[in-house]
Amino acid sequence: MVTVWPRRLALVVAPVHGESFASWVDRMALRNGCPPWAMVEALGLDVATSSDVRSLAYGVVATPETYRAIEAATGVSAEVVRGMHLAMFDGSVLDLAGVRVGDKESVRRAESREWVQFFGSRACPQCLAASNGAWLVWWKLGWAAVCPAHRTLLVDLCPRCRVSIRRGPAGQPARLSRSRMPDPLRCGALLSGFVCDQPIPQISTSAVSNKLADQQRLVLEVAMGRRPALIAGQVVSAGQWFAVLKATAMLIRLGVPEVLPLLNVTLDGQGALAAEAARQRWNRAGPMGRYGTAPRTALVAATLLEVALEVAEAEGESELVARLMPLAAAARMRWKERRPDLLTQVALSPVFAAALDVVLGGQAGRQ
Ligand SMILES: [Zn+2]
Ligand SMILES: [Zn+2]
Image (cartoon, rainbow, N blue to C red; front, side, top):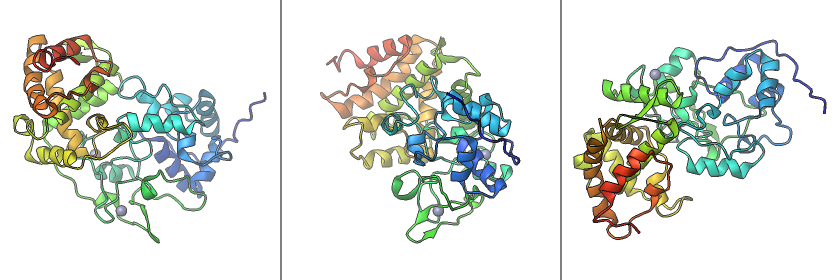
């Protein structure tokens, strides 16, 4: 088979450090004066077969050939191009092992399971203003809660149209447009008959504590493999570390509302957890799945993060048990005899699994 590399592009925009692939393509499209569809085709992705972003696993994963084709077209190294994809978090905060380009269902399955927005994003309005519209890839993570640089909560919703930022029309990811030019600094939600033009840099945000900003930084460093992951003082893999955070989040959610007054978080945070529990909805993951789904808002993510990290940072095994105990007690009041099995389904670190066994064993009983 003869590989035909895409033609080298004359106008290349340098990616901003940490920028997402879709953001970079949008800025390249603007620079080249062509809509995103044509830009993506010029980069060597197979948009002729399908311009459906799920089918392309757009910005999620790409094949090594695609990374190399993009390098050939732009001069931006294949490694940097991969770093703009969610693939960079595979094995730490995300499990993308089953996701394949061209297999829409594999993308959909991972989308409903993992704590991430494949095609949407939260945003820091100030970072967007400062970078003139570069969207960071980590803003897509379910654990993306606050901007560590600006110490503000990330934005979920457009205040003008009340649509989640970059959610796409009718909750479906937006297709790569063949005609419309992107506008990285505006909401751009397609509403009945018009496009929302809310400037994102003008959206106001709430300040957060330095502690939360530091916690977010820690999460990102573990996710990027820049710092060892510790649970109760023991080194675990990044994958296990995030599994522990997720299991703790499930335990917290199981105990709402009884657990709320026990949490060392803001009243706003408690309110957000209560509101999330109140809008219990059926979802693909099944009746128990809602405890394990990605936080719906940055505030919920921040609140879960704060408590889960406090648990993870216990100094030893007995302190870990002590920190889990009140959460488990509150959760037990809710589940009564029908204890969900979720906590045993994730790949937990042995130290955490043992502590969980202590706090959940005994009275609750194994089923
Ligand atoms: Zn920021
Ligand atoms: Zn809007």
